[in-house]
Image (cartoon, rainbow, N blue to C red; front, side):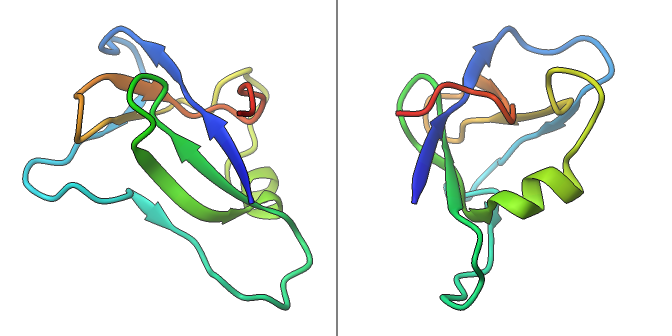
Length: 95
């Protein structure tokens, strides 16, 4: 599995989709954990505290479902642990 550390950004004021959790501290997305799926799995971690924001996301899901012409995905996840804003990117630095 590949871990991708998200980019920390200021609180978005533009046209981005911002996900926030109010009471539960768990990953926003938990993909399929099928061993027979040939693509690699990715976990997205908070760029500040390494909290798992999304796990078991297959690389082909990122390409097919979250593809965009822009460098970012226009999806921001507020970390439920440290409350920093994390931008999901397909080209974030791997750790």
